Image 1 (cartoon, helix red, strand yellow):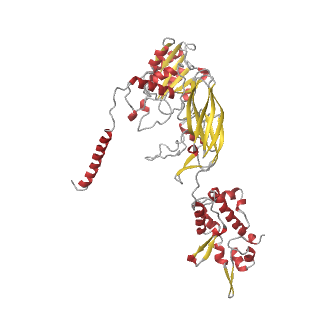
Image 2 (cartoon, helix red, strand yellow; image 1 turned 30 degrees about the vertical axis):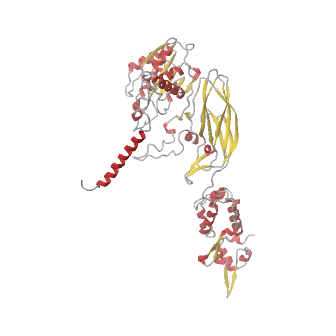
Image 3 (tube, helix red, strand yellow; image 1 turned 180 degrees about the vertical axis):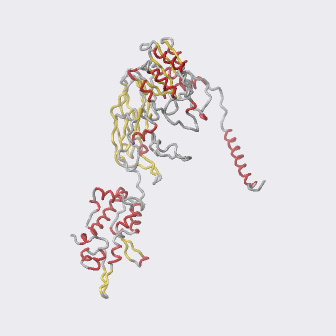
Length: 566
């Protein structure tokens, strides 16, 4: 109405929305409406299977688990989450479940006929509320039972979108109850329900720890299979569990200042950070126990060419119960030229084995297993040299390891800001160094390749563009441009003769410019009276030194002790 927005511009925007809506409607016509009813029972069974495969056994001292009638006559189920479990995230991730299997109901149905079960809520969701009656009741039950199944974790309001936890602790009222129960019954199993890592410090008071995560609507049935041993736990951690929040890689940079959050950890996320800084963790990435044990042997690696390898190993169930393990394959480079993780998970397989059964597992690693993203080259690159392949059950439990030789799959682009060490690392770099050092040695009497210690480090860490000032102008900018052009031309068969250092400069009247152009600008033509004495690059240094005029020019570039030396 006031003219600030043209009606024609508004129409364009509206037409886009109408076009999108019509296009979407047209696409929908391609899909048939679902026919028949959803099999909710099958979906519920699938949810149980997923939960069983994902639950992680973190601790099991003295083989406290599984819970059997041969070991225990009376079991206490304590904790609000046994009756009202956390099964999913809060906020926009929340969905409507058809039904929920509670751990208490599922365990009672499976165990009550053979084991006496007592129960107590123990705590409420309010961290500020310390209910003395609930705590006293739970402690009394725990004191008079053989084993306690204690359900703890984070209330839904502690984990949601839009905000983050400020620490890794569980609510204080749960901590207090843990202390109370630990005083009266050491045979306690902690079952955690949470979405993110906890510090698990209170787990020291328990004989066994199960991390159930947010296990979905069938979590109760899944636990009623794992706790009595009808199902052998086989989940492995998808994240490291540190001792402290301060140990995490983002502690110094998150949440940031004001409205800015800096991604300070870069590629060193999770186990990559803990391994890189050699920081101990409570439970490493990939960790997970079983009611049985496994043995890894006979690592064999075959090179298939093109940085591709076939890896095989033997895995044996050395325990007395059928179980599954997750065989993990990591690669890493001990001394990379760029900052990289010590190891990275590349592939894994979960395998089920009967007691005493042994299988041979095979993996194939292609070049992608050894690459990194090169931000300067803007592509995935493979650094050549020795790489290590490790196989095991976690990022800190890798009994099998072997080194392989990897061929570099790229040639670094050289710029004037590249280091001299980068040139030496270039496939054509040694040729360039040989020519340059040979000429410099003729001028100075020193071979830069013989440098040691600090001097060598300084030399290789010098940007190429600094050669002009370092040589007092002997190596002109145009020569540096020539070197860069030669190194980057892509022809690895191209040679680098001395003539490459001589540039014919038509703008300067056809004069020769090159590595020693700085000298010959001065000494190339010396006037004695009316007679010109012309020197060239083919002349011996002794001829120039015997002439006081040219010797004075050389003194600008070389110390007297060099000029007087042999």
